[in-house]
Length: 113
Image (spheres, rainbow, N blue to C red):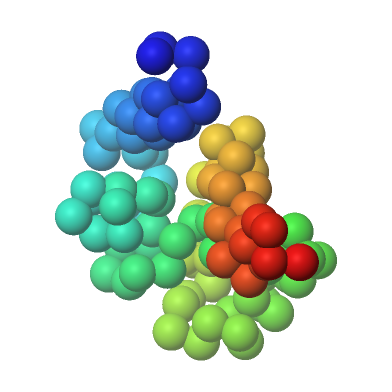
């Protein structure tokens, strides 16, 4: 029971959210609220996730290019999201990987191809 994949993923997600509680986020533009986007790190006043910003960064976009893609964000917000990502890279990378797996499994369900 405790060794199941779903249990381990839920436990990992719980530990991440606990470790990154509001008290411990030292980034002015970043917040986490379980009622907004499931508690993932987002830019304050938006529903734009740090993982979304990190995705653009990992595709090779500069902060200025990210701002052109997301003009509702200031450069300060983008740089703070990138700093948060670099401070918590392992956790955010796991979140990005989970999102990729969900997209692939929805678009290409097992047994259909």
